[in-house]
Image: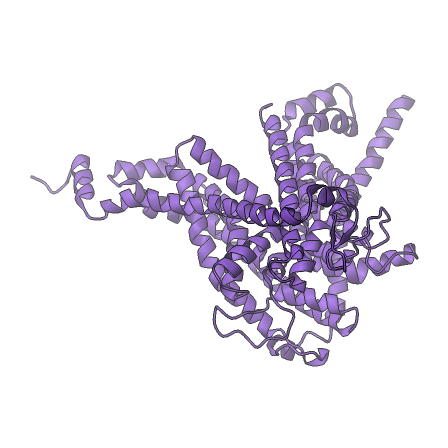
Length: 308
Length: 286
């Protein structure tokens, strides 16, 4: 009888060894690890909801969501969050005005016009831009962009909404560009070639064929970018200031929801005060906002994936 | 040539240039940003700066404490996020059946990836700092960071596992190996480069994050260099933040902030280059 063992025998010997026991344990261990992510989400939701509930016990809903006066540390504390909502929306809007045109046109260039060599230079630059920590952008906004802008707009406040808005826009350009480019790359070549064969210029092909075909992916990228801008903290904290005035004047200081949370935790409001709980109410609003936007973006991009 | 065609072609060329300028805009901004920051840091970034302790006087301030704090935080965060992330990825890719549980966990991770970092700070503050009574310690900061970057590790590890061809697994089963043996000895080693790249990217994200730490309660005060993981600490990005805020009163703080930013960027650049190098070197063609 030679020494070679058949496969069945090998398997039987293997199963008989002690190490087989790990096989039963590992799926359980791995599942527990996977459930940490679920626990994290649950933890976030519970934290926000419970402490926000403590807040809403002392401050009525309609004041929080309806009042434009915010003075958490004043003699008569007022907790209207509309100034914060306004600050968030204004800065995000400015960011989108910067990021959407530049990001989309850069994506068009990279996807339709650029040579492989140019693409090899530009894409890494985009990735670097996306990887810069937001605190660096915040410093840049405060120490360079604001003084620069104040030359153009003399009435610009030292803290304003324009500067962080623009810098936030710059920060999310890579996001818009790469996601839109992915969407455009997914459009089949046959559609492009059909348009060109019928005599359109590259511009017409892009505008009338590629972009409409990639539209849901492009819009999904916009929604994700807005969500990112809404959640951005350091740039607006540093360059946007902490004024709680409800105003539409972007040359003045505005505070966003995120900056409010940072201001209050670094000022160390005593735990248990209404001010402390207002943090969680604002945090809950912020969380719900970004969650809805992300879900919306996923819905839109699913619609896009079904086409091809 | 027909006049209409000429106009269309002209428009095409005009916008082609405009699109190119957009793409180069990113390059321009990056250059301006780097030049501006580096020029503000000249003269302030020297050896005493890297090894000195914090001080109210700008000329004597150093970032040793910040470096130690960031390092300590990474020592906590790195193994936690690596183990949790890789285990989650293995579960999702190798064990979980396509169904409600798997898609629930996947959606969860996708949602976590989109949650603003301040919210993670609130979570860390409530759970780690207060409930677990860790205070604003290195441990609390590290744990908060590891949760923040967990989705990055999970997603990139999943991709790495997916890229291992199925026939490797099948060959291993054919030799009589059990599922876990296959994973441990065949699939995991093959997916290490991809996982390593994702891990490094997650770390570089964690090093640069400021908001969760500020919300957690990292103080502004000058602190002694932390001794243990339960000590409170300062981290590099937080230091930059406070120096930037104080630069209104003391302009030299802006230079300190710029110098610290240069240090941070150099570290990140080194990490990202390592990740790219790993990705290129170990790219196997099956």
